[in-house]
Amino acid sequence: MKLRALPGMLARAPKGASRWHTYEDLRDEARRRLPKMVFDFVEGGAEGELTIAANRAAIDKVELAPSYMVNVADRDASTTVLGQPVSLPFLLAPAGLATLVHREGELAAARAAAAAGTVFAVSTGSGYSLEDIAAAAPDGRRWFQLYLWKNPEVVRSLVNRARDTGYEALVLTVDVPVVGKRERDLRNGMSLPPRIRWNSALDTARRLRWLRQLVTGPDITFGSLVELGIGDDASAIGAYVDRELADPSRTWDDVAWLRREWDGPLLVKGVISAADAEAAVRWGADGVIVSNHGGRQLDGVPGAFAVLPQIAEAVGDRAEVLVDGGCQRGTDVVKARALGARAAMGGRSWFWGLAVAGEAGVARMLDIYRTDIDRTLALVGRRRFDDIGPDLVV
Image 1 (cartoon, rainbow, N blue to C red):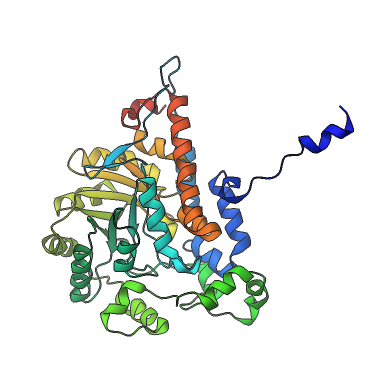
Image 2: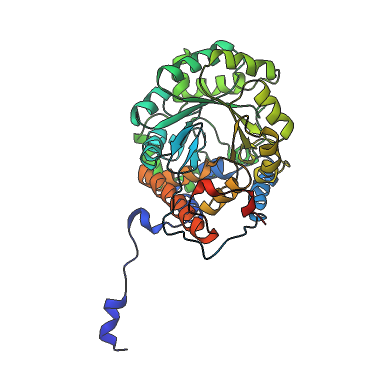
């Protein structure tokens, strides 16, 4: 090899979003860009974070049984969720305060999800109002996640606003009778709005891009809750949420009440047992989301994929089953379908994409899942995502 040939062989590193290829790539880049307290807010879980580890371990235990010498030249990853088509069977799970990681927050996520042909489940705790998010991507599929607040009029108001702005389904989260002990947040002094403390000042000052967004961007608050009449001060709204959101007295009777208030599809999220799945369907749910809140509530419960098969069997064809918890690759989405889920969801993944590049970062994250799913379909010998069944699992 001649030395003069070397310059032509030295390729430039990819620029833009194409340089990230995996969930880990996006997470590691987000770690570099975000202050520790914000990164830990997204990545962390409850107590010893055993459930976070269990989510990933349950997926890793699933082994696939591929079929070869099958014509998989033309592949189709699309499916239907709640009877409506999605071109990508990975949905954006509800996750609050996206404006903590990027000033465009849920607006960027809504646009990216719509462009990718998938569903965005908008959190009650979104940084922007549910109306603003709907306006950002009016043609996109949107669900609205909510809790059974102590005041039923708050619930009724949110339900009516979701109906008026075209949200097609409600996602009722049931695994927050009280808020879990999130030890990273306690150690870091995480608050709303975020406060820069002496012990974190140097770390925060090194993240100039994030700090600039904090100073020049919109106030970090719960956008959909400003309309409740408690003011637009973030501290006041945060205190209201702490006081009023979790109600340990709620029962399945309250789910029946919500079913009467809402005439569209209703999904119950936070189900990790067959008994609760059957109860959700019995009380009017059209779907259940197998989830342990990303390991952020009760520590020491099974990984979502570990209980998915028994829940899918218990529900049968009476309701659709989705799964949320530890899904980091397109291969994981294929495993979810083989274990009985209609599709998979994830929250941290789109937060990492958002943190590193806003809408383009979320779009890149979704493209990674799409490419992974397509490749996995070919490698397991299935032309269509809808062809995946339990026979794919060893």
